[in-house]
Image 1 (cartoon, rainbow, N blue to C red):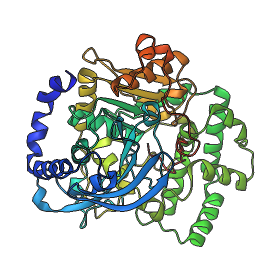
Image 2: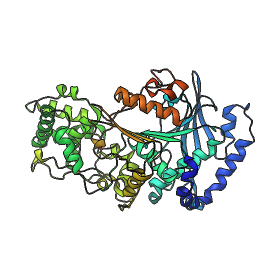
Image 3: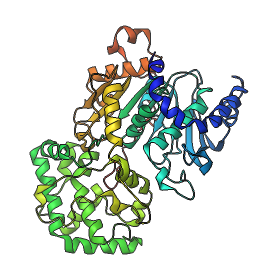
Image 4: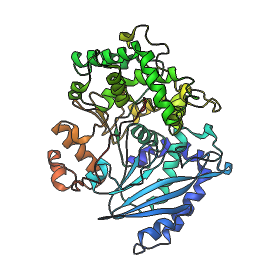
Length: 477
């Protein structure tokens, strides 16, 4: 019923990619020629355009690092192709499959997202287009947008669906949660459910007062004042601390051509400090923040540990050019007032344009995020959004309207950007787990009778299930 109701919604998008359907159909035919007894690697590599980079052993699974041929432009396939990196954690074709997107590069080490463990399934992971090595050459940056990326995901799903014929769920965290949501908006007939973690929803790029309100109430006043004082002190002591910064940059061979000057880079790092603390730390970590009277060295070291002085060097920005490009063309970027800094700030929060090389043209499209937001409010079906109470990126969350069906927005108490289903209240965690199991078609009878009995089907694996929050330097989801 879900897919039948949504077929009409995706018809226009299917027409827009009809030129690429031949490749997907060929993939189906190639996969269809293999039998269920054929080795899974051979079945996967029978898909046209799919090639093996590496297979890595892991107990209970087969793990493949793959390369898949994608059109540079799904609207105009004749413009050429590029190789997109994909990984596959294979358990069994009879199990459900989780499509994980990180929104950046893809890890080539075996890992399981939380929904994959909950449903005890397979996991396909996609590297986002334009993150190296999945970058077209030459790079036509106009083809880096959320629809093109969703179309990448749609083709991968279509190619693998004949092998993994069970239920599919999309998931991802942060920019990956955004990616999973955009995929559902553009191809609502593909997935049987979506679990989006800590996904920002910057509907109106020029309206960021929600962030100001967030920073006025997050944590405790004592912690907020402590963080603000250190941030302010770093700007008061700009001259001696920038001297240390320059010495470090010279020693590392770091340059500042993209942002323009060391001074701009320094202030960008300092202005990220409070945001980065709440994104990656807990309230209890405030105890480790030094007083404003600390030495220059301690203030510098604290700022560096939290927001990272390498972030806005050319070398630190290079790998993230695709993110800043998207932030400045579609996704939007946050801006906060930080009144405690007074006139100490020379530049304020700098726009994404400052972090992308000038030879890459950028133009912001203000229509994309309102479109996605409206679609989620009115058409969300079997979607789950999880946020952390103390995560700044959750200040502008996705919300559900009257048109949403079997969809939920939950907030994990006291959690940061690493919030997940396990961090929710016991009642909400059980409810979310039960819905995920049901969407994947693997809910045990006991869970169907009583959602409070829901728990992951696969046991915890300390290596496979260890989600690294990975402190990202610079203001990025």
